[in-house]
Amino acid sequence: MNIYADNAATTKMSPAAVEAMTYCISEYWGNPSSLYAIGQRAKEKLEEARAQIASIINAEPREIIFTSGGSEADNQALLTAAMIGLKKGHKHIISSAFEHHAILHTLKKLEKNGFEVTLLPVHENGIVRLDELEAAMREDTCLVTIMTANNEIGTIQPVREIGELCRKRGIIFHTDAVQAVGHLPIDVKAQFIDMLSASAHKFHGAKGTGFLFCRKGIPLSNLIEGGAQERNKRAGTENLPGIMAMAAALKESVENMDAHNAHKMEIRDKLIAGLSKIPHSALNGDPKQRLSGNVNFSFEGIEGESLLILLDQRGISASSGSACTSGALDPSHVLLSIGRIHDVAHGSLRLSIGEDITDDDADYIISNVGEVVAYLRSFSPVWRDLMTGKREFIL
Ligand SMILES: *Cc1c(COP(=O)(O)O)cnc(C)c1O
Image 1 (cartoon, rainbow, N blue to C red):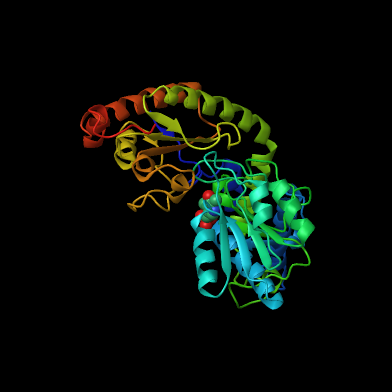
Image 2 (cartoon, rainbow, N blue to C red):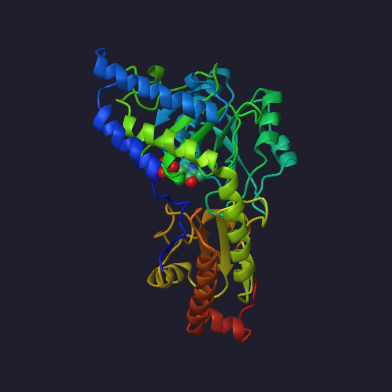
């Protein structure tokens, strides 16, 4: 048995994406900035990919800047809004407590440079509240950055409503949509989005490729200075193989989005129902307003890392948080943000399923997680304390 259930960390490239990439490498290897035919042929492909991606999110081609991935797009978006804010003396930023580190660490850097950051709570269900967002908005707020869907617990934020609140007040709204693009419908106009980050390897494209949508009229700031690529806003010879693969992967993902989501949702709900039967366990995040592929559970009295290793031995690839935090001993900031205390946050499991998951896979996961949790509890000192009443159960 081999079940890959870590699609939130990365996805396998789709055959269409691999084909687009190899086709590019052999046929369109020229430098898009070169004026001779070989270069111009590559340039055409670059612009074709840009137009295709733009139309999928209802943007204009010139509003798409290619980047090295989601982290770079997040960094550039935040820097852009900060530079615009600085010119007006607006140095207040609103975000949420459970953003990806690409956002949180960039916000920390901005704080060191005189910006003030308000992190909205996300509550037990993992969703920001609009009244709290509105109350946090100030005259000097230059940016609201709230992710479309969380990478650990999969909860989906009310993006259109957030965008509308920001648009009314003239505040720039950025969303890290890395977990959403290719998985949820995105319409930057209807959702009042000013900037949006995406990453190809989260929707079956290649790692090291992503894009930033930036609404026309918003002057982008550069992270990388150099040549005139990307309308002078992102220097460096374009990663055309990655970009062509990204366009192919995105096209395929959105064409199959409804069917994939329906299938994954069915399996997700089966996994949630099955894992809920494990005593002293709890689902993390809202049960319904979450990505179709995300299941995140906490099990009392165990260590998530041990659970992962034993599941790996049984052919199940999963995660205990995000790839960026596993290996570190700190419990996930996302789980802490929804009120899980340290001990419980440590014993957590994220399954992020793909469209290839089967009903049999779900049965296998449910029975194996149940067995492994019971086994780990059989020699866990924390579990013994819980059972003997020395410690109180939380879940
Ligand atoms: C994966 C991820 C990122 C980082 O994207 P990279 O392309 O790996 O840099 C940012 N935000 C979220 C929500 C993610 O899931």
